[in-house]
Length: 288
Image (cartoon, rainbow, N blue to C red; front, side, top):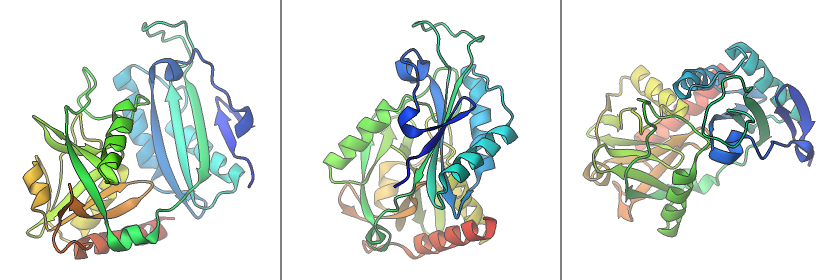
């Protein structure tokens, strides 16, 4: 297998030579943002939406990237092209850069930008045919002070522990249930349910990320006249749902057939879930 070519701060280098300083604030504090994008047939799906979200997020954490969205988009595509991957996962990371170990933000310090592409490893087909179990985990949803929306930050420890706890419970994913906000999101996914013909998902806020796959699913549903609700959900809504599924860029739409080992519907992937995934895959073909 060929070695990946990585973009770091204007240069392309083999993965084995790709290095970031131990003084980089991303390494020291998780002080940065990232985007995970999916490429199909050599093209990045909804790259503009991913990068628009990134550029909306940067000023919220007092960070500036001295490149335009178009320039970053071009570098993302060039990274993919140089690796000659047709179907890939692309991770873009931007940190606050290198400065003396301190919490003080130095706006004169240039950020670190890294773009890494790797071949996409699809989930087993059985997961889409049979569905998965997920767990609802009661905890306070992590939030950032002074920020009124959820961001994809490099500080991912809460998500890592959430995923580990859910795996220990025999689940593919753990979904946070906040005591005040109710059902929020998973370690790496957004959640949807279907109840009485209405597709429901938690409203985006400072604990629920505006996922790109989530947005595509909502577009498809509305284009096909499926009623949509973005509002507060509680655990009982999930347990009593007719269908449940989770979404993210790497897995697209995964059916959920049980929650905390309680069956959903007839414990088979739902009709609407299958339809939305078929339409999602068509959307990719049409756009790329």
